[in-house]
Length: 76
Image 1 (cartoon, rainbow, N blue to C red):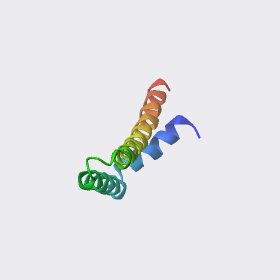
Image 2: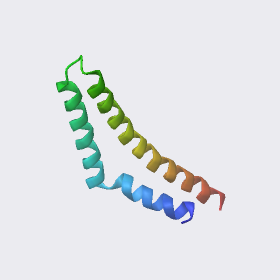
Image 3: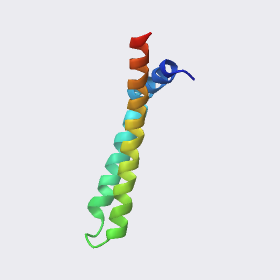
Image 4: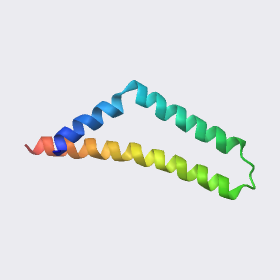
């Protein structure tokens, strides 16, 4: 799939209200899980941190696909 087509797909995903709502709900759940965890639960808190970072990484990857397509489009 070419970068411009991939960018269009990524744009639709990033602008999709249901997906944005899902991301926000998952982030809220992760934060709540962290808030309710014992401060001595280093392993659990580390897992929560990595879960949040994974979600952030997914959003960043979608944004990078969009950005790559915008650059490709500007060069064509």
